[in-house]
Length: 142
Image (cartoon, rainbow, N blue to C red; front, top):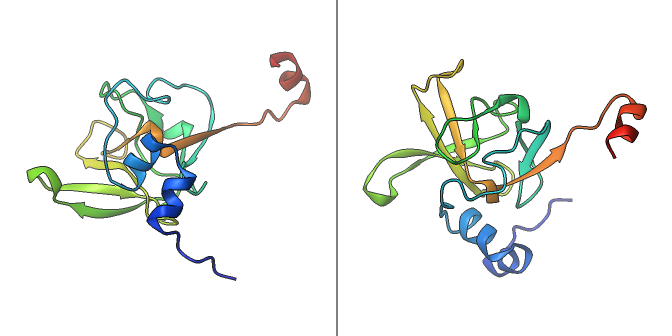
């Protein structure tokens, strides 16, 4: 069964105000202010709106911009893009393909192996930490 699309009121009720502002109103958090800009843990980054898998921590790097940066998405279809002409410039907007949430922007010609940088708002993400394959290692770190 296909789920009915959420209304704006549904999103406002589900999301914290800052997350709603970024995901649904296409705003940006201040640099160096978000939870994940300096996060180095292993895992998968999911959409804060719907839980869709977006990025692997293996693709995350410090771009020096103050926002979480990734050189590729988890899979080619994990993130979709659209032309963003707001604020008097043309950029490539990164969106969740499942719920349409604004994640951030994609920049080309970056000094990365892929030549791309996904500049993503921390508030658009939820990190699902990697699970250890060795139960003894997991027990020692708890």
